[in-house]
Image (tube, rainbow, N blue to C red):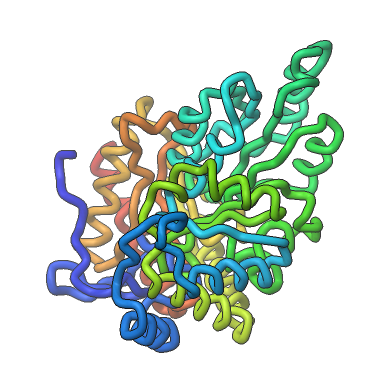
Amino acid sequence: MLSEPPTLESAAGPHTIIDGKEVVNFASANYLGLIGHEKINDSCIGSLEKYGVGSCGPRGFYGTIDVHLDCEARISKFLGTPDSILYSYGISTIFSVIPAFCKKGDIIVVDEGVHWAVQNGLYLSRSTIVYFKHNDMSSLKSTLEKVTRGNRRAEKIRRYIVVEAIYQNSGQIAPLDEIIRLKEKYLFRVVLDESHSFGVLGSSGRGLAEHYGVPVEKIDIITAGMGNALATDGGFCTGSVRVVDHQRLSSSGYVFSASLPPYLASAAIAAVDYLEENPALLSKLKRNIALLWNELSELPSLILASNPLSPIVFLKLKRSTGSTKGDMKLLDEIVDRVLKEDLVFIVTTKRSTLDKCRLPVGLRIFVSAGHTESDLLKASNSLRRVTALVLSELA
């Protein structure tokens, strides 16, 4: 908290304004480059003129507007699921969904790298939490075996595996095919957060199930925030009618929050429509990720730690200073100098004292379909130059 983060003075698109200067923005998860898109803006304007700004009531108390139902139906149609439910705030989706289904005495097996919203959901559930090593399927298998072997009590209680499709804290992609195989072998349910994979992974952006060719009905509960690829806000949960109906009476983030502003639901519908009509967006995003990966693959002091298909490009130090605090100080200096000297805006994986994630800290670069080749080369050249200078000064 020694310094204030930069303040944006324009839309958080591929280029934005900070301190009156135009910078290349790699700090916003605007994966499809839809922030400020004319079609999205027009849908919002039409919705504002028809409905106004807010709803002034929760969904169950006169806060349901027809565009909410349209948005839920559009998401279900796009993903091929029976039903969906909208939440007003992206981060509250997963930490309302988990305690809606998981209660005291239940067992949740969870990846140690999950982000804070998932951690909060685990805490609120009061369930028995067992962690497995980050994205390590042998660790997941041994954990499931340990939890269930010879445990008659485990056979009679609810059991869940909670993972992220693309991990916010590492940029790794969960191996869904193996997770589903283990889920079926050990009789667990799977809760999958697709906040960073919806609209990104798969040949048409339908997420992790499409990416691995796994039938979507094999995933018990899917959640996602809409503030990334769809460039709007709010979140959704999708699955069976039974899964969705249960939340309408039992999920605190749905029951007690004023419903999603109608114009944001309209924007989500327009974004899904645009994605479906323009599959070239995904091709452009994948080319941009591959180009940046290629450029960053030989940095002398930083290692690429994310999956090559992830739009979250994660870089960690080759040699740690020996403490998280020391690593963060070094990474913050790199980020500050890249912005001030080369007008490239990237971020570190800042964590609050509430965040119990055990993964190493690093630099997080959000790639967008809206970035140009020159944007990507500018970022890689800046990082190469600044990192070398900062580490030489340290030596």
